[in-house]
Amino acid sequence: MLRTAQVPAAVTALAGLLLLLLSSGCDGGAEEATPPSTAAAASPTAAATTTAVASDLTAIPMNGTSIVVDSTSDSDGRDGALTLREAIRVATGDLAAAVLEPAEADNINGTPGPESADAIVFQSSLFPPDAPATISLTSTLPTLGTGGDSVVGSGSAVIIDGGNQGFNCFQVESDGNTIKGLRIQNCRTAIVLREAAGHNTIGGAAEGDRNVIGPNAGVGIEIDGDGNVVQGNYMGTDVSGTESRSNAMEGIWIAPGAENNVIGGSGPGEGNLIAGNNLFGISIDGVGATGNVVKGNYIGVDVTGRVALKNRYGLVLAGGAQNNIIGGKERGEANVISGNQSAGVLIRGSGTRGNVLKANLIGPDSSGSEELRQGTGIWILQGPQDNIIGGTAQGEGNVIAHSGTVGVLIDGADTTGNTIRGNSIHSNGRSAIVSTNGGNLGLAQPTIEGSGPLRGAACPGCTVDVYSGSEEGQVYEGSTTTDANGAFTYDGALSGSLVTATATDAGGNTSPYSDPFAMPAG
Ligand SMILES: [Ca+2]
Image 1: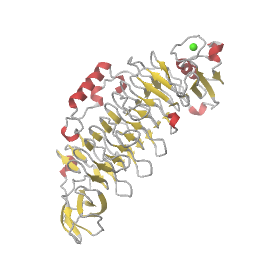
Image 2: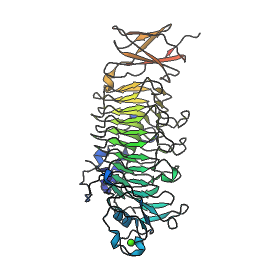
Image 3: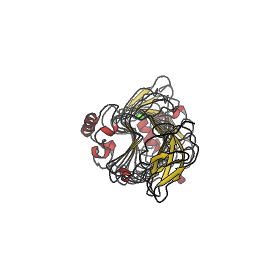
Image 4: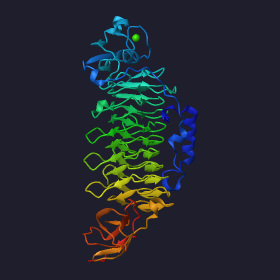
Protein backbone atom coordinates (compact mmCIF):
# COMPACT_ATOMS: atom_id res chain seq x y z
CA MET A 1 0.00 0.00 0.00
CA LEU A 2 1.26 3.43 -0.85
CA ARG A 3 1.39 5.70 2.09
CA THR A 4 1.51 9.36 1.34
CA ALA A 5 2.32 10.06 4.92
CA GLN A 6 5.58 8.25 4.61
CA VAL A 7 6.91 10.10 1.62
CA PRO A 8 10.44 11.15 2.50
CA ALA A 9 10.95 14.86 2.84
CA ALA A 10 12.98 15.04 -0.35
CA VAL A 11 10.23 13.37 -2.33
CA THR A 12 7.66 15.68 -0.78
CA ALA A 13 9.77 18.61 -1.82
CA LEU A 14 10.03 17.19 -5.31
CA ALA A 15 6.27 16.78 -5.45
CA GLY A 16 5.93 20.36 -4.33
CA LEU A 17 8.24 21.49 -7.11
CA LEU A 18 6.23 19.44 -9.59
CA LEU A 19 3.09 21.15 -8.41
CA LEU A 20 4.67 24.54 -8.84
CA LEU A 21 5.67 23.64 -12.36
CA LEU A 22 2.21 22.34 -13.14
CA SER A 23 0.48 25.26 -11.57
CA SER A 24 -1.00 27.62 -14.07
CA GLY A 25 -2.76 29.97 -11.74
CA CYS A 26 -6.47 30.14 -11.07
CA ASP A 27 -7.30 29.39 -14.65
CA GLY A 28 -6.04 25.83 -14.51
CA GLY A 29 -8.15 22.84 -15.35
CA ALA A 30 -8.54 21.83 -18.94
CA GLU A 31 -5.52 23.68 -20.15
CA GLU A 32 -3.02 22.50 -17.63
CA ALA A 33 -0.87 19.44 -17.71
CA THR A 34 -2.06 16.15 -16.34
CA PRO A 35 -2.83 16.66 -12.66
CA PRO A 36 -0.39 15.48 -10.04
CA SER A 37 -0.74 11.99 -8.73
CA THR A 38 -0.24 11.28 -5.09
CA ALA A 39 0.61 7.71 -5.89
CA ALA A 40 3.37 8.77 -8.27
CA ALA A 41 4.94 10.85 -5.56
CA ALA A 42 4.60 8.30 -2.83
CA SER A 43 6.90 5.44 -2.13
CA PRO A 44 5.89 2.17 -0.55
CA THR A 45 7.30 1.93 2.91
CA ALA A 46 6.88 -0.73 5.48
CA ALA A 47 4.36 0.37 8.04
CA ALA A 48 5.69 0.97 11.48
CA THR A 49 4.68 -2.02 13.50
CA THR A 50 3.66 -1.89 17.07
CA THR A 51 2.65 -4.80 19.18
CA ALA A 52 -1.05 -4.19 19.46
CA VAL A 53 -3.33 -6.15 21.68
CA ALA A 54 -6.17 -7.52 19.61
CA SER A 55 -9.13 -5.28 20.11
CA ASP A 56 -12.48 -6.60 21.14
CA LEU A 57 -14.76 -3.75 21.97
CA THR A 58 -17.39 -6.07 23.36
CA ALA A 59 -14.95 -7.08 26.06
CA ILE A 60 -14.21 -3.54 27.19
CA PRO A 61 -16.17 -2.45 30.23
CA MET A 62 -17.05 1.23 29.93
CA ASN A 63 -15.90 2.03 33.41
CA GLY A 64 -15.22 5.74 32.97
CA THR A 65 -11.53 5.73 33.76
CA SER A 66 -9.84 9.08 33.28
CA ILE A 67 -6.20 10.09 33.08
CA VAL A 68 -5.23 13.73 33.51
CA VAL A 69 -2.17 15.08 31.72
CA ASP A 70 -0.48 17.59 34.01
CA SER A 71 2.64 18.37 32.04
CA THR A 72 3.50 20.09 28.78
CA SER A 73 6.65 18.01 28.54
CA ASP A 74 7.08 14.99 26.27
CA SER A 75 9.22 13.10 28.79
CA ASP A 76 8.69 9.56 29.93
CA GLY A 77 10.11 9.24 33.41
CA ARG A 78 9.25 9.11 37.06
CA ASP A 79 9.31 12.82 37.70
CA GLY A 80 6.09 13.67 39.48
CA ALA A 81 4.12 14.75 36.42
CA LEU A 82 2.16 12.76 33.86
CA THR A 83 2.77 13.55 30.20
CA LEU A 84 0.52 12.77 27.23
CA ARG A 85 3.03 10.14 26.16
CA GLU A 86 2.83 8.47 29.54
CA ALA A 87 -0.96 8.78 29.64
CA ILE A 88 -1.33 6.91 26.35
CA ARG A 89 1.04 4.21 27.61
CA VAL A 90 -1.03 3.87 30.77
CA ALA A 91 -4.27 3.73 28.78
CA THR A 92 -2.98 0.93 26.57
CA GLY A 93 -1.34 -1.00 29.40
CA ASP A 94 2.17 -0.36 28.14
CA LEU A 95 2.99 1.47 31.38
CA ALA A 96 1.62 0.01 34.60
CA ALA A 97 0.06 2.47 36.99
CA ALA A 98 1.75 0.57 39.81
CA VAL A 99 5.20 1.75 38.77
CA LEU A 100 4.26 5.42 38.72
CA GLU A 101 5.28 7.83 41.44
CA PRO A 102 2.41 8.86 43.71
CA ALA A 103 2.42 12.36 42.18
CA GLU A 104 1.98 10.76 38.75
CA ALA A 105 -0.51 8.10 39.84
CA ASP A 106 -2.78 10.66 41.47
CA ASN A 107 -3.72 11.84 37.94
CA ILE A 108 -5.52 8.56 37.36
CA ASN A 109 -9.12 7.87 38.33
CA GLY A 110 -10.12 4.24 38.08
CA THR A 111 -8.14 1.33 36.72
CA PRO A 112 -6.88 2.08 33.23
CA GLY A 113 -5.35 -0.38 30.82
CA PRO A 114 -6.01 -2.32 27.67
CA GLU A 115 -9.30 -3.68 28.96
CA SER A 116 -10.88 -0.34 29.84
CA ALA A 117 -12.11 2.69 27.96
CA ASP A 118 -9.80 5.41 29.17
CA ALA A 119 -10.30 9.13 28.65
CA ILE A 120 -7.12 11.17 28.54
CA VAL A 121 -7.84 14.79 29.42
CA PHE A 122 -5.68 17.84 30.11
CA GLN A 123 -5.34 19.79 33.36
CA SER A 124 -7.18 23.02 32.69
CA SER A 125 -4.82 25.20 34.73
CA LEU A 126 -1.89 24.10 32.55
CA PHE A 127 -3.88 24.18 29.30
CA PRO A 128 -6.34 27.05 29.81
CA PRO A 129 -8.89 27.56 27.02
CA ASP A 130 -7.76 31.14 26.39
CA ALA A 131 -4.01 30.43 26.46
CA PRO A 132 -3.03 27.36 24.49
CA ALA A 133 -0.10 25.36 25.79
CA THR A 134 2.11 23.35 23.49
CA ILE A 135 3.36 19.81 23.88
CA SER A 136 6.44 19.57 21.68
CA LEU A 137 6.87 15.98 20.64
CA THR A 138 10.20 14.25 20.22
CA SER A 139 8.76 11.28 18.32
CA THR A 140 5.45 9.73 17.28
CA LEU A 141 3.11 9.34 20.25
CA PRO A 142 2.55 5.76 21.45
CA THR A 143 0.07 3.93 19.26
CA LEU A 144 -3.54 3.86 20.37
CA GLY A 145 -3.56 0.12 20.00
CA THR A 146 -6.04 -1.40 22.43
CA GLY A 147 -9.30 0.32 21.51
CA GLY A 148 -11.91 2.46 23.16
CA ASP A 149 -9.59 5.18 24.43
CA SER A 150 -10.00 8.93 24.01
CA VAL A 151 -7.66 11.90 23.84
CA VAL A 152 -9.83 14.86 24.66
CA GLY A 153 -8.61 18.42 24.39
CA SER A 154 -12.12 19.80 24.53
CA GLY A 155 -12.46 22.43 27.24
CA SER A 156 -8.76 23.16 27.28
CA ALA A 157 -6.37 24.45 24.65
CA VAL A 158 -3.74 21.94 23.65
CA ILE A 159 -1.31 22.22 20.78
CA ILE A 160 0.44 19.00 19.76
CA ASP A 161 3.52 20.07 17.82
CA GLY A 162 5.75 17.66 15.90
CA GLY A 163 8.44 20.26 15.41
CA ASN A 164 8.86 19.46 11.71
CA GLN A 165 10.99 16.44 12.53
CA GLY A 166 9.42 14.19 9.92
CA PHE A 167 7.34 11.84 12.08
CA ASN A 168 3.60 11.31 12.27
CA CYS A 169 2.07 12.55 15.52
CA PHE A 170 -0.88 10.27 16.32
CA GLN A 171 -1.12 6.67 15.20
CA VAL A 172 -4.18 4.47 15.75
CA GLU A 173 -4.27 0.70 15.26
CA SER A 174 -7.44 -0.33 17.08
CA ASP A 175 -11.18 0.31 17.20
CA GLY A 176 -13.37 2.86 18.84
CA ASN A 177 -10.88 5.51 19.89
CA THR A 178 -11.60 9.24 19.85
CA ILE A 179 -9.25 12.16 19.21
CA LYS A 180 -10.88 15.55 19.64
CA GLY A 181 -10.41 19.14 20.68
CA LEU A 182 -6.75 19.38 19.74
CA ARG A 183 -4.55 21.51 17.52
CA ILE A 184 -2.07 19.28 15.71
CA GLN A 185 0.72 20.80 13.68
CA ASN A 186 4.21 20.39 12.24
CA CYS A 187 3.92 16.61 12.06
CA ARG A 188 4.52 14.59 8.93
CA THR A 189 0.92 13.39 9.10
CA ALA A 190 -1.13 14.58 12.05
CA ILE A 191 -3.26 11.45 12.55
CA VAL A 192 -2.83 8.08 10.86
CA LEU A 193 -5.64 5.55 11.18
CA ARG A 194 -3.94 2.30 10.15
CA GLU A 195 -5.67 -0.69 8.60
CA ALA A 196 -6.52 -2.09 12.02
CA ALA A 197 -8.17 1.20 12.99
CA GLY A 198 -11.93 0.90 12.65
CA HIS A 199 -14.82 2.97 13.91
CA ASN A 200 -12.70 5.67 15.44
CA THR A 201 -13.97 9.23 15.79
CA ILE A 202 -11.84 12.22 14.91
CA GLY A 203 -13.42 15.48 16.06
CA GLY A 204 -17.10 15.96 16.76
CA ALA A 205 -20.05 18.21 16.15
CA ALA A 206 -19.59 20.37 19.24
CA GLU A 207 -17.34 23.38 18.70
CA GLY A 208 -14.94 22.32 21.45
CA ASP A 209 -14.51 18.90 19.90
CA ARG A 210 -13.00 20.27 16.71
CA ASN A 211 -9.43 19.39 15.86
CA VAL A 212 -7.49 22.06 13.99
CA ILE A 213 -4.99 20.24 11.80
CA GLY A 214 -2.28 22.18 10.01
CA PRO A 215 0.27 22.97 8.94
CA ASN A 216 1.76 19.51 8.48
CA ALA A 217 4.39 18.23 6.06
CA GLY A 218 2.28 15.34 4.81
CA VAL A 219 -1.42 14.67 5.20
CA GLY A 220 -3.84 16.00 7.79
CA ILE A 221 -5.58 12.66 8.39
CA GLU A 222 -4.67 9.42 6.66
CA ILE A 223 -7.31 6.68 6.79
CA ASP A 224 -6.38 3.10 5.97
CA GLY A 225 -9.08 1.43 8.06
CA ASP A 226 -12.86 1.09 7.85
CA GLY A 227 -15.86 2.79 9.36
CA ASN A 228 -14.11 5.77 10.89
CA VAL A 229 -15.88 9.10 11.33
CA VAL A 230 -14.21 12.48 10.80
CA GLN A 231 -16.45 15.36 11.83
CA GLY A 232 -16.28 19.04 12.61
CA ASN A 233 -12.55 19.50 12.08
CA TYR A 234 -10.60 22.27 10.38
CA MET A 235 -7.98 20.85 8.06
CA GLY A 236 -5.56 23.26 6.42
CA THR A 237 -6.66 26.39 8.27
CA ASP A 238 -5.97 28.28 11.47
CA VAL A 239 -8.32 28.20 14.46
CA SER A 240 -10.44 30.99 12.97
CA GLY A 241 -11.07 28.97 9.82
CA THR A 242 -10.13 31.92 7.66
CA GLU A 243 -6.35 31.66 7.16
CA SER A 244 -4.42 28.92 5.45
CA ARG A 245 -2.22 26.58 7.50
CA SER A 246 -1.49 24.21 4.68
CA ASN A 247 -1.02 20.53 4.94
CA ALA A 248 1.51 19.89 2.19
CA MET A 249 -0.37 16.95 0.71
CA GLU A 250 -4.05 16.18 1.35
CA GLY A 251 -6.31 17.39 4.10
CA ILE A 252 -7.74 13.87 4.25
CA TRP A 253 -6.40 10.85 2.41
CA ILE A 254 -8.65 7.81 2.26
CA ALA A 255 -6.16 5.18 1.16
CA PRO A 256 -6.48 1.96 -0.84
CA GLY A 257 -8.65 -0.57 0.94
CA ALA A 258 -10.33 1.92 3.26
CA GLU A 259 -14.07 1.31 3.34
CA ASN A 260 -17.18 2.94 4.68
CA ASN A 261 -15.58 5.91 6.36
CA VAL A 262 -17.68 9.03 6.86
CA ILE A 263 -16.23 12.48 6.33
CA GLY A 264 -18.60 15.12 7.66
CA GLY A 265 -22.28 14.69 8.31
CA SER A 266 -25.62 16.31 7.74
CA GLY A 267 -26.17 17.54 11.29
CA PRO A 268 -25.14 20.95 12.65
CA GLY A 269 -21.38 21.15 13.18
CA GLU A 270 -20.67 17.78 11.64
CA GLY A 271 -19.15 19.07 8.42
CA ASN A 272 -15.42 19.59 8.20
CA LEU A 273 -13.66 22.66 6.87
CA ILE A 274 -11.07 21.39 4.41
CA ALA A 275 -9.32 24.33 2.85
CA GLY A 276 -5.94 25.81 2.18
CA ASN A 277 -4.18 22.50 1.57
CA ASN A 278 -1.35 22.44 -0.94
CA LEU A 279 -2.53 19.38 -2.85
CA PHE A 280 -5.98 17.80 -2.53
CA GLY A 281 -8.64 18.68 0.01
CA ILE A 282 -9.88 15.08 0.15
CA SER A 283 -8.47 12.20 -1.83
CA ILE A 284 -10.23 8.84 -2.02
CA ASP A 285 -7.55 6.90 -3.72
CA GLY A 286 -7.03 3.35 -4.83
CA VAL A 287 -8.46 -0.12 -5.22
CA GLY A 288 -10.68 -1.07 -2.34
CA ALA A 289 -11.43 2.49 -1.30
CA THR A 290 -15.17 1.95 -1.44
CA GLY A 291 -18.36 2.96 0.28
CA ASN A 292 -16.94 6.09 1.81
CA VAL A 293 -19.31 9.01 2.31
CA VAL A 294 -18.36 12.69 2.10
CA LYS A 295 -21.16 15.02 3.13
CA GLY A 296 -21.80 18.43 4.59
CA ASN A 297 -18.23 19.70 4.22
CA TYR A 298 -16.75 22.99 3.05
CA ILE A 299 -13.94 22.19 0.60
CA GLY A 300 -11.98 25.16 -0.77
CA VAL A 301 -13.86 27.88 1.07
CA ASP A 302 -13.35 29.45 4.48
CA VAL A 303 -15.53 28.97 7.54
CA THR A 304 -18.06 31.53 6.30
CA GLY A 305 -18.61 29.58 3.11
CA ARG A 306 -18.46 32.89 1.27
CA VAL A 307 -14.72 33.33 0.67
CA ALA A 308 -12.37 31.13 -1.35
CA LEU A 309 -9.58 29.42 0.60
CA LYS A 310 -8.26 27.13 -2.04
CA ASN A 311 -6.95 23.63 -2.07
CA ARG A 312 -5.13 22.84 -5.28
CA TYR A 313 -7.89 20.33 -6.11
CA GLY A 314 -11.00 20.05 -3.97
CA LEU A 315 -11.98 16.38 -3.99
CA VAL A 316 -10.31 13.54 -5.84
CA LEU A 317 -11.60 10.05 -6.63
CA ALA A 318 -8.81 8.03 -8.22
CA GLY A 319 -6.92 4.82 -8.74
CA GLY A 320 -9.88 2.45 -8.71
CA ALA A 321 -11.94 4.00 -5.91
CA GLN A 322 -15.50 2.73 -6.29
CA ASN A 323 -19.00 3.35 -5.05
CA ASN A 324 -18.21 6.31 -2.88
CA ILE A 325 -20.92 8.88 -2.20
CA ILE A 326 -20.24 12.59 -2.36
CA GLY A 327 -23.10 14.75 -1.10
CA GLY A 328 -26.74 13.73 -1.09
CA LYS A 329 -30.20 15.12 -1.52
CA GLU A 330 -31.22 15.14 2.12
CA ARG A 331 -30.87 18.33 4.10
CA GLY A 332 -27.27 19.09 5.13
CA GLU A 333 -25.67 16.46 2.94
CA ALA A 334 -24.42 18.76 0.19
CA ASN A 335 -20.78 19.70 0.13
CA VAL A 336 -19.57 23.10 -0.98
CA ILE A 337 -16.64 22.40 -3.32
CA SER A 338 -15.67 25.81 -4.63
CA GLY A 339 -12.83 28.25 -4.88
CA ASN A 340 -10.17 25.61 -5.49
CA GLN A 341 -7.24 26.39 -7.71
CA SER A 342 -7.72 23.74 -10.38
CA ALA A 343 -10.65 21.30 -10.53
CA GLY A 344 -13.28 21.23 -7.84
CA VAL A 345 -13.66 17.48 -8.37
CA LEU A 346 -11.14 15.24 -10.14
CA ILE A 347 -12.21 11.71 -11.09
CA ARG A 348 -9.28 9.81 -12.48
CA GLY A 349 -8.04 6.45 -13.64
CA SER A 350 -9.41 3.14 -14.89
CA GLY A 351 -11.40 1.20 -12.37
CA THR A 352 -12.62 4.37 -10.73
CA ARG A 353 -16.30 3.64 -11.09
CA GLY A 354 -19.70 3.79 -9.53
CA ASN A 355 -19.05 6.92 -7.55
CA VAL A 356 -22.03 9.20 -7.05
CA LEU A 357 -22.05 12.98 -6.68
CA LYS A 358 -25.37 14.48 -5.71
CA ALA A 359 -26.60 17.91 -4.67
CA ASN A 360 -23.20 19.51 -4.22
CA LEU A 361 -22.41 23.17 -4.82
CA ILE A 362 -19.43 23.10 -7.16
CA GLY A 363 -18.39 26.65 -7.93
CA PRO A 364 -20.90 28.76 -6.00
CA ASP A 365 -20.52 29.91 -2.41
CA SER A 366 -22.52 28.29 0.38
CA SER A 367 -25.54 30.46 -0.43
CA GLY A 368 -25.53 29.04 -3.94
CA SER A 369 -25.78 32.50 -5.43
CA GLU A 370 -22.29 33.98 -5.41
CA GLU A 371 -19.33 32.99 -7.53
CA LEU A 372 -16.24 31.30 -6.10
CA ARG A 373 -14.41 30.51 -9.28
CA GLN A 374 -12.22 27.45 -9.72
CA GLY A 375 -10.45 26.05 -12.77
CA THR A 376 -12.79 23.26 -13.87
CA GLY A 377 -15.93 22.08 -12.11
CA ILE A 378 -15.53 18.31 -12.54
CA TRP A 379 -12.69 16.78 -14.55
CA ILE A 380 -13.04 13.08 -15.45
CA LEU A 381 -9.96 11.64 -17.12
CA GLN A 382 -7.90 8.55 -17.85
CA GLY A 383 -10.59 5.88 -17.76
CA PRO A 384 -13.22 6.31 -15.04
CA GLN A 385 -16.48 4.56 -15.89
CA ASP A 386 -20.07 4.55 -14.76
CA ASN A 387 -19.84 7.43 -12.34
CA ILE A 388 -23.00 9.42 -11.70
CA ILE A 389 -23.12 13.20 -11.54
CA GLY A 390 -26.53 14.34 -10.32
CA GLY A 391 -29.87 12.64 -10.82
CA THR A 392 -33.36 13.49 -11.96
CA ALA A 393 -35.16 13.00 -8.67
CA GLN A 394 -35.98 16.15 -6.72
CA GLY A 395 -32.87 17.61 -5.11
CA GLU A 396 -30.32 15.26 -6.64
CA GLY A 397 -28.73 17.69 -9.07
CA ASN A 398 -25.46 19.41 -8.39
CA VAL A 399 -24.89 23.08 -9.12
CA ILE A 400 -21.80 23.31 -11.32
CA ALA A 401 -21.07 26.92 -12.05
CA HIS A 402 -18.48 29.68 -12.36
CA SER A 403 -15.65 27.46 -13.55
CA GLY A 404 -12.89 29.30 -15.35
CA THR A 405 -13.06 26.74 -18.13
CA VAL A 406 -15.78 24.08 -18.45
CA GLY A 407 -18.37 22.71 -16.07
CA VAL A 408 -17.70 19.01 -16.67
CA LEU A 409 -14.80 17.74 -18.78
CA ILE A 410 -14.87 14.09 -19.89
CA ASP A 411 -11.51 13.13 -21.27
CA GLY A 412 -10.25 9.92 -22.88
CA ALA A 413 -11.42 6.95 -24.95
CA ASP A 414 -11.62 4.71 -21.89
CA THR A 415 -13.62 7.28 -19.96
CA THR A 416 -17.13 6.01 -20.61
CA GLY A 417 -20.56 5.57 -19.12
CA ASN A 418 -20.34 8.65 -16.96
CA THR A 419 -23.87 9.93 -16.46
CA ILE A 420 -24.55 13.62 -15.97
CA ARG A 421 -28.24 14.30 -15.40
CA GLY A 422 -30.47 16.74 -13.60
CA ASN A 423 -27.77 19.23 -12.64
CA SER A 424 -27.81 23.00 -12.81
CA ILE A 425 -24.81 23.87 -14.96
CA HIS A 426 -24.37 27.52 -15.79
CA SER A 427 -22.08 30.55 -15.93
CA ASN A 428 -18.96 28.57 -16.74
CA GLY A 429 -16.15 30.21 -18.68
CA ARG A 430 -16.64 28.00 -21.70
CA SER A 431 -19.07 25.11 -22.04
CA ALA A 432 -21.21 23.17 -19.63
CA ILE A 433 -20.08 19.69 -20.70
CA VAL A 434 -17.16 18.89 -22.99
CA SER A 435 -16.23 15.40 -24.18
CA THR A 436 -12.73 15.18 -25.57
CA ASN A 437 -10.47 12.41 -26.91
CA GLY A 438 -13.44 10.05 -27.14
CA GLY A 439 -14.76 10.61 -23.63
CA ASN A 440 -18.26 9.14 -23.12
CA LEU A 441 -17.83 7.60 -26.60
CA GLY A 442 -18.02 11.07 -28.06
CA LEU A 443 -21.80 10.81 -27.89
CA ALA A 444 -23.20 13.57 -30.09
CA GLN A 445 -25.15 16.43 -28.59
CA PRO A 446 -28.85 16.65 -29.46
CA THR A 447 -30.21 19.22 -31.84
CA ILE A 448 -33.35 21.19 -31.07
CA GLU A 449 -35.25 21.93 -34.24
CA GLY A 450 -38.50 23.58 -33.27
CA SER A 451 -41.08 24.24 -30.63
CA GLY A 452 -44.76 23.73 -29.95
CA PRO A 453 -43.98 21.09 -28.77
CA LEU A 454 -40.22 21.20 -28.41
CA ARG A 455 -38.75 18.79 -30.89
CA GLY A 456 -35.38 17.64 -32.14
CA ALA A 457 -33.02 14.75 -32.72
CA ALA A 458 -30.49 12.73 -30.77
CA CYS A 459 -29.16 9.20 -30.71
CA PRO A 460 -31.92 6.60 -31.29
CA GLY A 461 -33.27 5.09 -28.10
CA CYS A 462 -31.57 7.65 -25.92
CA THR A 463 -32.93 9.61 -22.97
CA VAL A 464 -33.10 13.34 -23.62
CA ASP A 465 -32.98 15.72 -20.66
CA VAL A 466 -34.36 19.20 -21.29
CA TYR A 467 -33.05 22.28 -19.53
CA SER A 468 -33.78 25.97 -19.71
CA GLY A 469 -32.69 29.27 -18.27
CA SER A 470 -29.23 29.74 -19.76
CA GLU A 471 -27.06 28.87 -22.71
CA GLU A 472 -25.87 25.86 -20.72
CA GLY A 473 -28.39 24.05 -18.58
CA GLN A 474 -29.45 26.02 -15.56
CA VAL A 475 -32.84 24.49 -14.78
CA TYR A 476 -33.64 20.84 -15.34
CA GLU A 477 -37.15 20.69 -16.75
CA GLY A 478 -37.78 17.03 -17.53
CA SER A 479 -36.93 14.14 -19.79
CA THR A 480 -38.14 12.34 -22.84
CA THR A 481 -36.80 9.62 -25.13
CA THR A 482 -35.98 9.41 -28.80
CA ASP A 483 -37.65 6.99 -31.19
CA ALA A 484 -35.86 4.48 -33.41
CA ASN A 485 -35.01 7.27 -35.80
CA GLY A 486 -33.64 9.53 -33.09
CA ALA A 487 -36.53 11.98 -33.10
CA PHE A 488 -37.89 13.38 -29.84
CA THR A 489 -40.60 15.71 -28.67
CA TYR A 490 -41.03 17.27 -25.25
CA ASP A 491 -44.31 18.87 -24.27
CA GLY A 492 -43.60 19.71 -20.64
CA ALA A 493 -43.60 23.27 -19.34
CA LEU A 494 -40.43 25.33 -19.77
CA SER A 495 -39.50 28.02 -17.28
CA GLY A 496 -36.95 29.85 -19.41
CA SER A 497 -36.79 31.13 -22.95
CA LEU A 498 -33.41 29.55 -23.79
CA VAL A 499 -33.66 25.77 -24.00
CA THR A 500 -30.91 23.14 -24.20
CA ALA A 501 -30.80 19.35 -24.03
CA THR A 502 -28.44 16.44 -23.40
CA ALA A 503 -28.67 12.85 -24.56
CA THR A 504 -27.81 9.82 -22.44
CA ASP A 505 -27.48 6.40 -24.07
CA ALA A 506 -28.26 2.97 -22.66
CA GLY A 507 -24.66 2.67 -21.48
CA GLY A 508 -24.97 5.77 -19.34
CA ASN A 509 -22.88 8.02 -21.57
CA THR A 510 -24.13 11.60 -21.47
CA SER A 511 -23.49 13.96 -24.36
CA PRO A 512 -22.59 17.63 -24.27
CA TYR A 513 -25.47 20.08 -24.29
CA SER A 514 -27.19 21.03 -27.52
CA ASP A 515 -26.82 24.49 -28.87
CA PRO A 516 -29.34 26.69 -27.10
CA PHE A 517 -32.71 27.13 -28.75
CA ALA A 518 -34.54 30.42 -28.28
CA MET A 519 -38.23 29.83 -27.72
CA PRO A 520 -40.46 32.09 -29.81
CA ALA A 521 -41.88 35.01 -27.84
CA GLY A 522 -45.45 34.52 -26.61
CA1 LIG B 1 6.26 11.39 34.25
